Image (cartoon, rainbow, N blue to C red; front, side):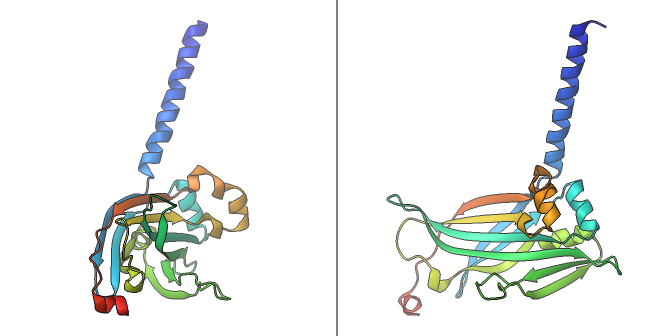
Length: 210
């Protein structure tokens, strides 16, 4: 076989492999399906829906009993032309997804936001049991009417703020062997980020006094 033909076949196979990897990345991409903010008497609330897609490696680990921790993070950032942007508010909601070995059902636990206390504020506050991993991931990817900017933290002056929303798999919570090996690979990268402008109504004098 001519050497040129062999090289051409190798190149074609290489391109096919690269396209397969790219297509796999598209199939497993975690996407933001919807995001909405509303303003209430308590402050700014956020509702969002994320389609959580896991690679085969991550889902296999989950089905073998490795708990996964996901985080919804919302920052309200106020741009400042003379200095670094000011982070007005930064809130996280952590969720743990596990499979119950005996019942083969799935549990999604909503955890306390870290508070800097001795226990880290990581106690369980709510938990839900669902029959399938797809239902667990669908539940994990949703937040509804979440208070992300309480009224006392409302920015009063300056440029219009932005809302920065992130959703990610917290690989720092993986067991040690996963952190040293698989957890650092691209296979374990479950992450998205979205930035939206905010148009906040002005606070009334009575609200400012509070």
